[in-house]
Amino acid sequence: VRLFRRVWSRLSRPSGVIVFGLLAVTMTIGLVVVPADRTQGDVQRIMYLHVPSAWLAYFAFFVTFVASLRYLWQRDLQVDRLAAAAAEVGLVFTGITIVTGSIWGKATWGVWWDWDPRMTTTAILFLLYLGYLLLRGSIVARERRARLSAVLGVIAFVNVPIVHFSVLWWRGLHQVPTVIRPGDPSIGHLLLATLLANVVSFMLLFAWLTRRREELETSNDASFALAEQRP
Amino acid sequence: VSDPFVAGAYILGVGTIVAYVLSLRLRRAQAAQRQVLLEREALRDRLGHEAL
Image (cartoon, rainbow over all chains, first blue to last red; front, side):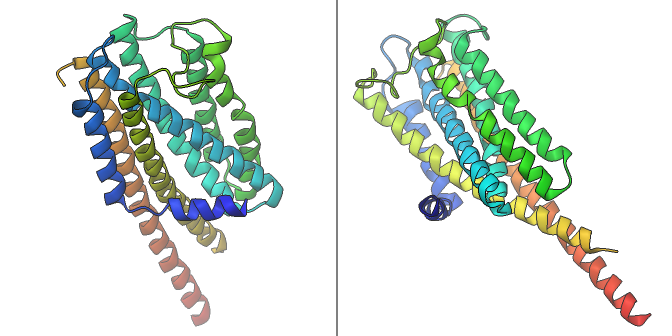
């Protein structure tokens, strides 16, 4: 936990200029520099936005899971703020994953939406963390809010591996994993390098956004503390 | 890239990120403003109490 906090403290302080500059560079490489996929053509370029968004969301919910466990163990409100911040950022990127996936689906499968296992479990993931944020918003007492949200933050994370392995467990339209899978990745080296470069810039973006959101949560808590002190 | 699906996906994706960053900035400014108001009120309460 101490190591996690130290790594988090280091990684969550990149400047906005570096984060957004790197994001612009890696996205431009994916959009115009690397050649188009031989089978899908230009449409495959959606992968450089869709996959990093999905992995960012998985990681964000993992952070919420770890921070929730830590809150239940140590009752530290600072980690509750981190859990809330990561959950909100994860929800935004789950939304981006669903929308870009739907556009990619229309271009390749001919439909905007299908009740395919991956798409359905991702929609459930979105609703679970939307519920998490609604729960937080509906409880004023800070300790009670933190405790109940931490319980939900742990339970909701169960769905993340289900989303990832859904394409292996059930048959559907969505392709099986191409990178995080047993054996070598099943995409070309250049495409894989571009994808991983985008994943790195999205992870820095996650750190930057989560730190900003955490600061906002701290500021809100300070305001509530001031309001509570009033006669 | 001239593909409308790719353009649409990137416009929506990047647009959402930009909108989220702006919402964070706006909420941060509102929180700072609220904190200043509450601190001012707390000071006024304390000064009023001391005057009594």
